[in-house]
Image 1 (cartoon, protein in one colour):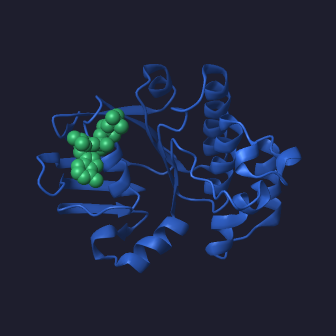
Image 2 (image 1 turned 90 degrees about the vertical axis):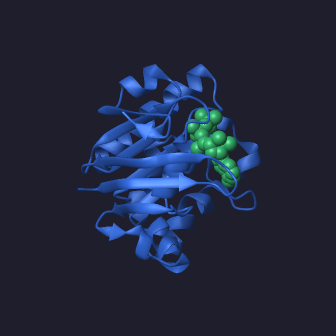
Length: 215
Ligand SMILES: Nc1ncnc2c1ncn2[C@@H]1O[C@H](COP(=O)(O)OP(=O)(O)OP(=O)(O)O)[C@@H](O)[C@H]1O
């Protein structure tokens, strides 16, 4: 099993419980859409799975690693190895070129693979843009760089939080096609937060959050 979320609960300080004993499993290579109304806790769950925040109880296991036992260093290592995250806001490093952004995580984790990076660059249509900086790119181009950066480390699990939420319809369709194509090619699992039924329908399965629980 690639991901096992087991009876995980999360309450932010001073708030009501956002997640109440949520369980979710993903097999290797499986793609799952995480849906639910605004405020239902989708990003919260994604951030917990991505080791970006800590849960109150339960357990999350990613590719055999239990997150509750990790310190900040261990969480950072996991984020550079087994899992990668793509955000709605792209989150590229403004001072680095496209080429440097693409290589950034792979370099940090000591997994630089020039042939794979070159293949990703081609597939994502970024070959002519390598010397540019993020501010010189369209939103769709920035998100393609973010996807390349994420997949450069060959993660077992890709997490995506509304990856096309900031893009128009045409760019959104192109980015989604590329992301799903590369996910299939690499065989990684995908957990993708979306409000869109059309996007959810393209994934293997849907998990819907409501009232702090998954259905
Ligand atoms: N850092 C935080 N501190 C306190 N409360 C938070 C924090 N982050 C989120 N929340 C609250 O937790 C609840 C779930 O938020 P979350 O962002 O996970 O929902 P979501 O389903 O992703 O929403 P959206 O679709 O609008 O992005 C909301 O009520 C939100 O206000």
